[in-house]
Length: 404
Ligand code: GLA
Image 1 (cartoon, rainbow, N blue to C red):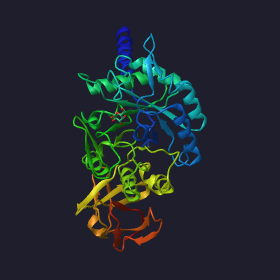
Image 2 (cartoon, rainbow, N blue to C red):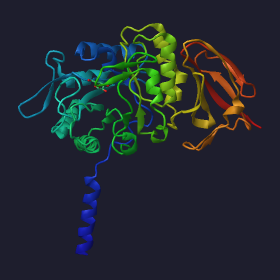
Image 3 (cartoon, rainbow, N blue to C red):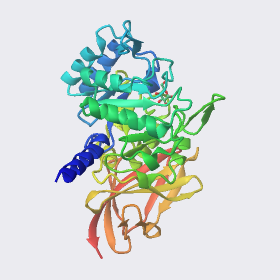
Image 4 (cartoon, rainbow, N blue to C red):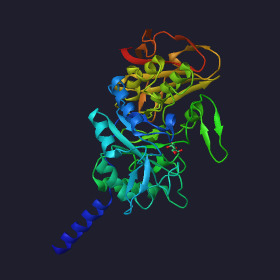
């Protein structure tokens, strides 16, 4: 009896010492806004409050964008006991007051730190302060943590991210854990139980098809990042997403490029984290970010990342399985000229091993709804004749109509 009790106690201890990430926080890809792509280190509480206000006034919050995420450079120093503080000049009211404000608007607040000694912007990192920082974030009412990977020489990524996951768990407040390790150690293979999303690449920047070489590191355009997602789709699903980095929509690319970028991120079931100044955005930017039919493809409850079915002469045909037997189909023209493309459905009788779904165009006729023009495009009984502008997409939703 004594032995059984001892064994039971040991087993319980063993189970409870293995902390879990908080479940249920990202059943669909998270949606929100982050300060980095537009503001870099130039953030302060006035900007962030203004962003929160506009998130509500523009309808973005009601379209699903609920996280307001501070990126790098919100930090001040650590206090004499090692607790992190906010920059007293940029955030004089403190993060708790900001969090109360953001919550009062029906939004959530995210924060940023780094597994190393400093952040990428040279602010204090969480190394050696993981539990302290997790408690601080929980006390401030933080809902989302982006955890970066600068200044991590000789640190093991698996251990470092598990440590922060365990610290967040111990602090008790459900905080979504966004891992920003740039894909170096292939986190998609080991991080399902650790984080809710993991960056798959280095940083994005606002160019459609280019690489920005900084010598020791590179930033990548939208097409480069898209190509780096190859082979990763089987690792994504509800609660654990591939993160191809935040959106650059509204940051200077042409409208067609922005539309293609947004559409592809939706096909990839990527987190939709806005990176533009939503206080001043054009109607065109707003129309892209708030297209509810395209967002619905991203937020589909099945959480299956899309697949590239064909790539030829700069034209790619992507499919994404959706609920109720539906599919999204996105035809991407990467060329700098418009192209005509005939979509012959019968060439895409796919058997998707990841989802177990098949398009079965030989058996099922689908209605075709254009998600950008909002026009019905007939059914899959007829081929779709398309003219796709340069660096743009045609995106449609297929819904089963009749089974032959
Ligand atoms: C890294 C990250 C970026 C951003 C910056 C901040 O480069 O990948 O997304 O957070 O750091 O310094």
